[in-house]
Length: 89
Image 1 (cartoon, rainbow, N blue to C red):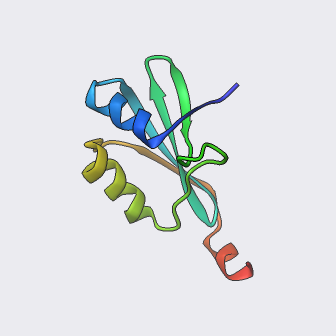
Image 2 (cartoon, one colour):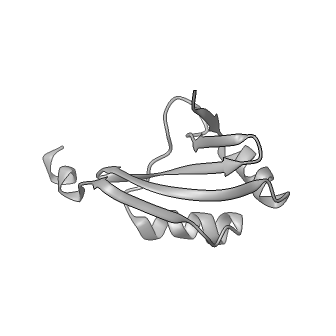
């Protein structure tokens, strides 16, 4: 089962070297973040913990990871990214 991580937990993991890898995944018209930690893979969730945190712009995700958390490497998967869905909502 996929585990979740909050922004605060991710910040602590990043500060202590607990992040092994980062995946940015494009799904629909948004991007979400998966974190590989020493305890396994986790999905970054909103602070309320009800759903995955999503970004509409890739550069915003990259800024969050690099400038906000000090994580400068990630792989990007965008085979399911369909930005035109934004216009259908």
